[in-house]
Amino acid sequence: MLEGKRILLIIGGGIAAFKSLDLIRRLRERGASVTPVLTVSGAQFVTPLSASALSAQKVYRDLFDLTDEAEMGHIELSRSADLVVVAPATADLMAKMAAGLANDLASTLLLATDKSVLIAPAMNVRMWEHAATQRNIATLKGDGVLTVGPDEGDMACGEYGPGRMAEPLAIVEAIGAALADGPLKGKRVLVTSGPTHEPIDPVRYIANRSSGAQGSAIARALMALGADVVFVTGPAEAAMPAGAEIIKVETAQQMADAVAAELPVAAAVFAAAVADWRVTSASNSKIKKDASGSLPSLSFAENPDILAGVSQMKKGRPGLVVGFAAETDDVIANATAKRKRKGCDWIVANDVSPETGIMGGAENAVTLISDLGAESWPRMGKDQVAARLAAKIAEALG
Ligand code: C5P
Image 1: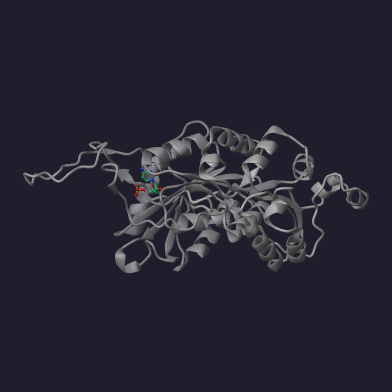
Image 2: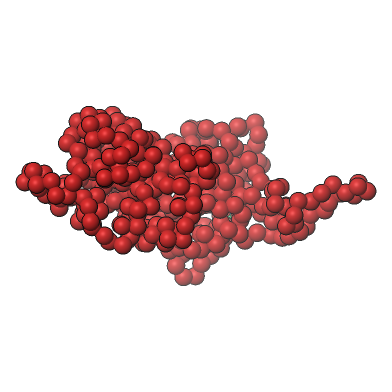
């Protein structure tokens, strides 16, 4: 998928820079060529020699290196690649990009390039969460800069939270998505995925067994056909589809709000297992056992039906709306009725009876229900279901 692709890799100054050496190796294994650019602080973390040995290319470092200008000017360097990748993208590099500064080789290349730019942010949690960085990332996204990560986890500085650079393989996946060329190129497709969590109190919640595997697979398959995917996900176990714009939510209401904020889109696939009800009696403090032995009672309210709401939009409805129906009995009859009731174009129906092992498993056996009737697909991997569905979506969007 990356055979023959040329990547200009800007390595910023952060402890995550060591992972960029592995990234170079992974990209070359897949047939891509990598031209590394080291910022001054990047060179404090990885040596030019290791970057050039792993890439088998000259490493560029200084804007005023006249030999380089004679061989290849910085303008040409910025445009000779298929994609510019910044990993790690430090808070400083992101601020420079957002402000349009060009005071060293990396920032000049980023301002001069006519190619897409993908950044993998990496920094301390507080630096990531700082209003200035959040403003900068929003500006960069608005400018069309693609992002992957940051991940959440333990950080080299000893703190925990978002700010870890995405792993090299996730960056490779995002690069693949950025370079993908197919029938969905330039089309924005929204995918919802995973379960929702409906709080009972600050520590307890109501959830379901959805792993998010099918939703992640659909997002990847759509990206492989060139789509720009917006991925709105509840707390899912499955790996996130790197390269998608990922919006994490917890509750159905948050999911509904996130979806509304991302419209319009060319198509929307609602693969999330959204809770039908939320707890209206949710407590702000942990509910304690009562000494008298009396049991707590919960009251519920219905959650917004996101799929039905989007399907029935009068203005700005996506060109194609796909829902899922997880059923345990009379799968086709129930799903056909659901398609009518919700007003979506297609329903992907599956039998999630425990004996099928589908919910949380690697395989799925689905029936696609459209106005043409029901089309049952043989049992296959969730990746294959996703690829087939993505191909159908591409065909329908024409
Ligand atoms: O009504 P039911 O939950 O069975 O419908 C399933 C379909 O509706 C799925 O596509 C699911 O993502 C979507 N849905 C939704 N919002 C809800 C409930 C379900 O978008 N509140």
